[in-house]
Image 1 (cartoon, rainbow, N blue to C red):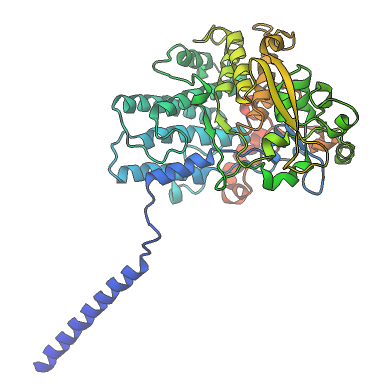
Image 2: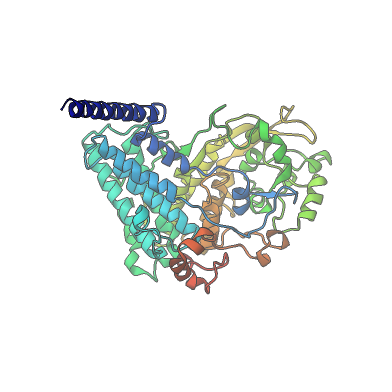
Length: 525
């Protein structure tokens, strides 16, 4: 009996020691510096950061604002690869919503309301780049590893519905004076500010679908647009540039991509004639702010504030021809004083007031609505131009000082300073600028001014608007590759071919069974 009792005691001791050791090992395994749960506010911040598309590089070449002049460092070709893969960010949206609930948030809370906006934003971004995409079966983890592709029409319909719901949710939260949102790097947790962004973005999506206004009546594009514009209490939109969703750059933590440290890269890029000619042909003072005069033209006797001293390169030319022109000093660079002399550059609009003004002007021009709170199409066209001028601190009338960098002078200068006389009324009175009315000529003016205002902001919106309307005329040639064509879409991620073969093949049937960058997606037909 003593032997059995001894065995039981020994076994109990071993079990106790084993349990104690297991608890100890579990405690040791937990890293107090590596949290297993991420707060909703941190996930929110990541989702916000991903909205930014930094200026510079291929983005500006696709939009035909800048061009590469040295083939060793890049090219100007439209041989698109894969589009954006944003399902990781959308997964963070899902997790953000879950964490808000786990943390005790009510069923209706800011993270869920804005989650609907983020879904609309990121799904339509991917669809604008590629066409049909997984949406309804996406974000389900291991339960749906091969999601079907939803049609582009369905993606936009679902997104417009989510924006309607987001607006309704935000209205309720604002009425309740909800202050539970944290982690907002753009609007200091203001739900009222976000509601304006949501509805302004919805106007953008409706304009993206302009080709479908008559062919797909079930979309109710004009009716939706009118509903928003005619009820500013229910659907508040941006009222000034202060309402914009924009990114502010910081030194040293997050510098503007074009800065003192990257100045050498500036010599590899020139401004394009697509952009510069729109300005010089209209004697537009914005050219003095965004562009340097061609150094060779100035040294040959030209004035740094003469419009004839500004010359953009033809992005369709062979790289050798561009290199030769650049070497001869006859092509303009981006304005080095504004973009390279410091570290914080300019704010980068993501969803802007200026764009919204032109979108409303376009809707009036197309007959979707007759007017908005500011007035007719010309009133919004005017407001858009003035907002863009104001962004560059150009006065309505008077003088301004502009700066340019002479040939061979380092980024530190000295810069040439010049005084320029400006008069908005005189600028607007030009036949090329004054609104021509609700006709094709007037629409072309709206689109050209919107393109000018998109300079180095709003991601691929300049390209998307060209693709939809053909305005402005994008240059093509041997330099742009792709057999002299501007690509109309990005390809799908390469992994889709092997990981989701059946659905991938179904998606590309509309492009003659080829993942073709020249294929015409639904919203362009």
